[in-house]
Structure formats: C-alpha cells, structure tokens
Image (tube, rainbow, N blue to C red):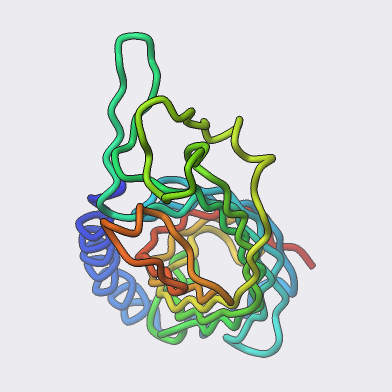
Length: 237
C-alpha cells in the first residue's frame, strides 16, 4: 500500500484541478457574489498520515494570522522504514524482515505557515493552499534483534523483537524536520471541515540511523519520504 503513494498523489492533484473550472464559472455567473470570505480564527483536529513506510496519526492546531495566512502547530507519530524492507510471515503469524537492523518511530513537532491560494476565483468550500512547516523531531530507535556477538548482523539463534516488545530497549535520537506540501480544505469556513495534503518530508537526526544491516546499506542521518495527509476537525470563532 505505501508504495502507491505517488500514484494516489497524482490522482488527487488531477481531481483538484478538475474542480477549478467549475468553481470559477460559478463566480462568473453570479456577479453579485461577494469575494471569498475570511476563515474562522482558530481550529483543531486530527490527521491520518500515509508515507512510504506506512500509516501514522497526529493532531493539529491552527490560528488565522491575516487574510489567507494561517499559523499551524502539528504533532504526529509514524514509523520509518527503508524502502527495501520486505516482511514475510510464517504459518504461525511470526514476522521476518530480512536484513533489518532497527525500528524507528518518528514524532515531529512542527510549526508551520499555511497560505491559501486563488481565493478570489474559487468557491469557499474548496480552499487550496500551500504549506511549509519545520521544527524538532524526536526519533525512538530500538533493535529488531538481540545482537549477541555484536556484529550488527542477524545470525541463527538470535532473538528478534516485535514492534512492541522491543520498544523498551530503545533510545531517543533528536533531530530537525522540514515539510513542504500543497493541499485543500473542504467544507464551510466555520464548523466541521476536512481536507487532504500532498507533500514531501525530510528529517535530519544528530546521529546516523541503522534501519538495515550495515552490509546492506550504510547508516544515514537523513530520512525523506513523500506523504499524503488526510485531516479533519473544526473551525471556530
């Protein structure tokens, strides 16, 4: 599923562009209609994130700064994996990921700026925007297996840990993150709203992360991924 992110992104962009002519025509046929109105001053809600590594969850707060510009505060939790990781399951449901070295959970805490686009030309119930955000990211890095002989390679007889069972053997790895995206909000300017965002995220940690065994891929401190984010919440005065 995560590997189809680019194709879903292209589809959603095409669908959004297809709405522009209809919205513009509606404004042209109603010359008495007032220009796009201002959104409610504040809002909050939840997010569902889809990246090349899987799913994530988060939440957000937003505050209108001036016409078309909104400040955001977002926090999310998702796992990071290398694109070459492939999971296999035996008949008992046990999971095996060849060449995997560690797990990584990422918690970005980002402050951002959202800029609404094309407000005079598009109906207010479809509000495209550009979004840029950045801030600290907390990585929780923990082992996939118990490395008995310290050779950084999984050997026969060594115990593997699950996503949950190995979590308490981890350590905190701080870093900084940046995301750039485009999206659209749907719904009324005040009350229940929802939307979708397509973008690219980069996290830079203060030390290298070994997602795979060193013989397969060298450790790196820069992790990147495209993402699709679905968000829903409430705008209020």
